[in-house]
Image (cartoon, rainbow, N blue to C red; front, top):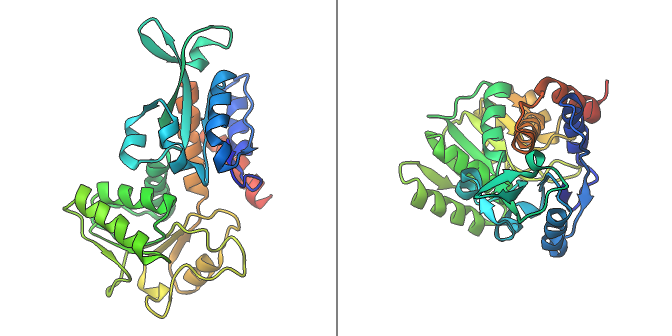
Length: 289
C-alpha cells in the first residue's frame, strides 16, 4: 500500500488477516511514498513483480496516468485505488498471482477502483439506505468526494447537494455531474428541505480540534435522517457525536474501508475474501477489545 502519510492506516491488519485465511504466501505492507516518488514506486513494484498495490491519499488521482490499463471501475470514477500487476502470456494478460514470480515476460499495471461500490454497500448495510431516490448532502468535493458524488449520481439519487470549503471545486463537480448524468438534480450549497443522508468525505474530524465539516447554522443535523462519516478513527467523530445527539442514525467509515479492501483482495487473488475475519481484525485494531 502506498500513501502519504501512511502510519495511520489499518489496512495491513485487515488484509493480512484475509491473506492468512486464504493461505496465500503474501504479506501486505504500508509504505510511505511521497507524491513526487509515486511513479518510481509503482514502476519498482512492477519490476519486483508485486502481486498488486493499494493506493490511498493523495495518490488515487495522481496514479491515473501511471497505469497501463483501466478496469471499467477506474475509467468511470477517474481514480485508481487498486493496482493488479499482470504478465502477458501468449496473447492474454494474466494476474501475477496466477503466473508466479519466476516467469519472465512483459508486465503491466492494471488499475481498478473499489471505493465507489464500497461506499454504496456501507451505506446500505450500516444505515439501511437505498440510494435510488434519496436526498443527499455531500460534504467535500476532493478525491473521495468526487468518487462518492459520481457513485450517487449513477445510483439515481433523488437530489444531491455539494458543499465544499472551496466553492469552485463544488461548482466544478456539480458541472461534471450535470454533463455526465443530466437526469440527476445536483446543486451547490445547502438544501432548504430535509435530507435522507449527510455524507462527510472531508478529513475534518480526525482531530478533536478540527473545524466542523458542516455549518449547522445553515443546515441543522436534525434535518437529516442519517449521517455517514468516511473517517473511521476515531470511531465517533465530533460530527457523529452531534448527529447522534440530534437523533440521526450514524455510522463511520469502517464499513467502506472493509469493503473496498475485501474487493481489492479478490482482484489480486481471484478468491472470495473472508470478510467476517477481516472485519473482526479491523475492529480490534481500530477500537480494541
